[in-house]
Each structure stands twice: as structure tokens, then as C-alpha cells.
Image 1 (cartoon, helix red, strand yellow):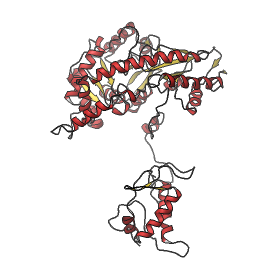
Image 2 (cartoon, rainbow, N blue to C red):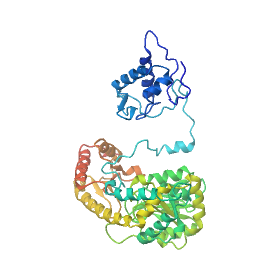
Image 3 (cartoon, rainbow, N blue to C red):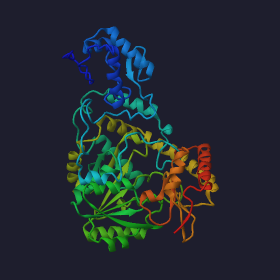
Image 4 (tube, rainbow, N blue to C red):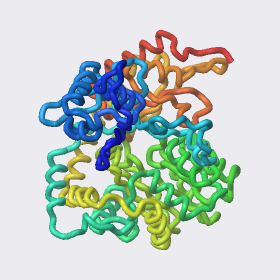
Amino acid sequence: MARHTGSVFSVDVSGLEPTRAQPVSARISDRLRAAIRQGSLVGNARLPSARTLAKDFGVARNTVEGALAQLVSEGYIVRRRGSGSFVATHLPEHDAPPLVPSPTPLGASAPSRPPRLSQRALALRDYPGHTVAARTLPFTPSLPPVRLFPRDIWNRLLAREAARPGTDYWTYGASNGLPALREAIAAHASAMRAVRCTPEQVVVVTSTQQAVELAGKALADPGDRVWVELPGYPPVRHCLRSIGLHIVDVPVDTEGLDVDAGRRLAPEARLAYVTPAHQYPLGHELSLTRRKALLDWARAADAHVIEDDYDGDYRYEGRPIASLQGMDAEDRVIYVGSFNKLLFPGLRIAYAIVPQALVGAFVDAKHVADGHTALLTQGVLAAFIQEGHLARHLRKTRAAYDERRRAFLEEARVLEPWLEFGPARAGLHVAAYFREDASRRWDDRAVAQACAKEGIEVHALSRYGATGRAGLVFGFASATRAATRSGLQVVRRVLEDGAGAPRKG
């Protein structure tokens, strides 16, 4: 009984002749159940209609209806009025495999050995990708509260831009980005961060990581050395390593990157990655002395500096911190900014402001990477900036984050017996060190894991490469005062219960 030639159904429907031991409807149920459990039919997948299935299986429609009814009763299939039948998103068995496509087709034998991966792929396992969305829990670092974002304005602009005549958003675009967005970014960066640039120097990308990757590809060869802050931002470290560059860990202190240490470790490095306005994750500023020393080294070594200004728009105390790029008279700084933390993480628009002489190399690298960033979204963001919505959003969120920052610092006093908090004058997070003597150490990862089991997300400082004192990193922007208070009580209970307690050694 062969499958109908016009079928697009992924389940083998051959060989369904009835037997004395099992009627056809039961055999259909078995086939579909096995396909669901093995992942060939994924969760929430829409099944063909009973009429189509009957045609595919070469049986009566009532036979198929009986098989589907059996699977509905078992919890493998759900029926939605007016929509059809769908694979259940949660299988009835507690030990069921994840509802993801199986790499092995039904009926085929599993491979005898795992696939041979590249050295690059094996190295990337140190920083694995996500197969589920990131959790939005207190106190996830650097997570903006999306509830404060003006979705109604964004949706209105989205509908308006999508309805514009012409094909600007619907064909292949320029790799460096829409002219309107590049103009808006240049104006914003110049006004808010004292960046010296023209729209021609702006290259629109999807993320900070992509901007850093383009800089690495344009300015360094595999095997070349690059300074990276330690502790520092893990995605950038792995991004640079993935393109074959040799990471040189340069320590940071209360003045930011230790430039003298970098000179001793790798004076010939081609790049240096820094977060000068608000060091990630410790929160220190790169001092004026260190800024001048870094620029002097870059000029003498014929190197470049990648300035990641990931949250430079949020400063609550003291004088505004001008960009490092604004001090650079030798065109040695690539300035990187992102709207993903400024507006919402799902946006996926960031930018690099590069010296004029490097624009061509960056555009070539962007073209090879992915052609261009999504055009319609660029158009909406350009309008959002040009019509003043970004400035209003910044004023609103800066006030809200400052209030939440002060609330966090007040409520966090309950953790003072265990933690000593670092600077919190800017950004969306604050780091804290464990109080300890020279003979004892806390296990910050064990503390973070224990908090996660209680529904609270804090990051271990060792996650960022810290090898000295253990500590925790807290995001404060996404939690109200009530959520902050209850979350910190959870952290306190974890510490009182001894998770990650000091141990000798």
C-alpha cells in the first residue's frame, strides 16, 4: 500500500495492511506516536487534515479519525477548533525526549560514531549556543525591562514603514546599512557620547559580537594577538578566538585595563578590546592616564582599539564619561554601540563607527558575513531616532533605572555580611565580591546555581574569567523594588544555608 505520490507528509505510511493482531487504525496510531516521540513530528506541528491523511495512507477517513482520536486521548495530539490537529508541545511521558527534529530518519540506523567536528566547533563548546530563549529573571545582568519600551509607538512606525511605496526595504540592501539610519546613529553618537564621525563611517551590524568579529577579520590575521580584559565579556572572547586570534588576558583594576601589563604580555598585539566607560563586569572607568597610555600604545604598535560602549547612555552619578574615540586623533579606535540593550534584546541592531580609511574593509567583511542587517527594522529604528522617540525613551529609562539602582543598593544591605559591592554609578548591573580571608574561598558558581534553583538569576564572577576573589554579578534594571526585595531575600537564604560556603585551601 504505497504512499500517495502527492504527499508531503514526513511519516512513512507504507505497509499498513491490516493483520489479525492489529487493525489499521491502531497501526496508524503507532506510526504517528513513534514519529512524535522520536522527534520527526515536532511540538506544535500542524498535521494534515484527516481527509489528506486518509488519502496518503490509502484508507478510509473514519479509520484515520479513529487513530487521531486515540492519540488525542493519550495526549500526543491536540485539536483546535477551526484550526486542525497539532502535535502536543509536552509529551505525556516524563522521560520523553525533547520535541526537536531527530537527526536520524525513522527506520534508519543511528550513526556508529559522532560526526567529525572542526577544531573551531570544538572550541565553541566552551561558550555554547542557546536552543531556548534566555530567561528574564531577577537579577539577570544587562537585561533591559521590555515593559518600559513604547511598543505602541514602535508598532505604529513599523506599520507606516512597511506600507511605504517603493522597494527600499524589500530588496538586497547596502552592507553598511540604510543611509537614514546611519545618519541618525552618527547624530546620536556625536551628541550623546562625543564621538567624532560622519554617517559614512557608520556600519550597521546585528550585535556587538558581529562588530568585534568584523574588526578582527579586517585588522588581524589568524594567530595574531589581541588584548582582552580579564575579567571581561565572554562572548567577545569566544568571538575573537573563533576567527583564529590569540587571546591575551590583560588584567583590570580600579582604573580599568592595565595598559602596562598589556605591553609586557603582548606589545605586538594587533587589537585591544576594552569597555572604558563602564568595565564589564566590574564597573570601573578607564582612567584618563590609562586612556592616554592605551592610545599611545596603539599608535606606536600600529594597532587598533575596539571601544565597546555597551551602556554608555546610562550614567547616574558624577560627570559624563566621553568616549575614548573622541580623544583619538590618530584614527586608532573603532567605536561600537548597540540598541539591543538600549531598546530590547530581540531588536538585533548595533553599529560600528570606524576610521574613514577602514570603511571599505569593514563593509567587505559585513558583506561576506551576512550581506546586510534587516532593512525594514533599520527603517523603523531610523524613524524612531529621528522623531525623538529614542531621546524620550532614554530620559524615561534613565530615571527608572536610577530609581531601581538606588532601591537595589538599599535592599542589598541584607547581603553585607557576605558581599562587598563595587561601583554602581552607571549601567544596568553591579558586581560584588565575597568577603573572605586569605585562607578561604567561596564557590560563586555553586551560589549562582543554588539561586537559579530558587528562580533567581545571578552570575558568578568567575563566569567572566575572574580568578582572584569570587563574587556575584547582579542586574538591577529589570526588577521593581518589590521584586528586588524578595529576590535578595532568596539570595540571603542561599548564603545562610551554606551553598558555596567558604572552604579551606
